[in-house]
Image (cartoon, rainbow, N blue to C red; front, side, top):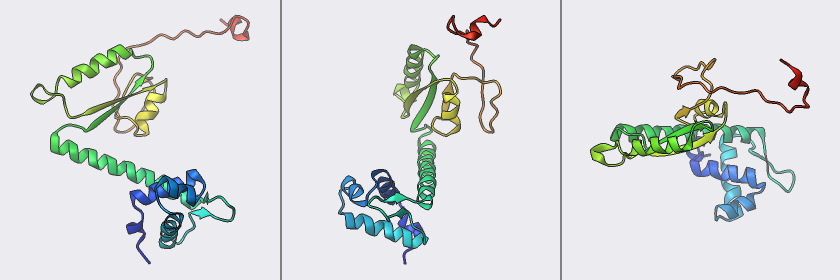
Length: 193
């Protein structure tokens, strides 16, 4: 019997995810340009190494078991950790992050963000663009914080700062945006002071 550590690879996790989303070994095989028996064999090898069933095969569809869901969930976390290691190694080698993901609240001007990105690209080494790719993702309200806290973003611009306390995260106020509470004239809250 093979060691689970040798069998649980990025390719194996992608294959298991494909079986789970497609609902069958045959569909996953088509997606990965394999024959169905190869997919079944690889899944069974992992199941034997872990001594668990990853899929319930009692019906025509392959339904993922709780153990299979846990493997995919933890596998996704491990893949994110591997990506983070690769980024750190690149940062050490070059002094620059390979990619900076910025979650930007919808209240922030898109024009301002593009001007900031342009300025960033002009500050690279020897007047060349830095080797960092910028990925700007739009968020709304608490979405900026969730993107930051969930590791989907490296920097969050905009969002509510008050009451947010998280170890390792620094927050600075950029200013205030007044909100107006508005309701339809016929709504009961319209009569409230």
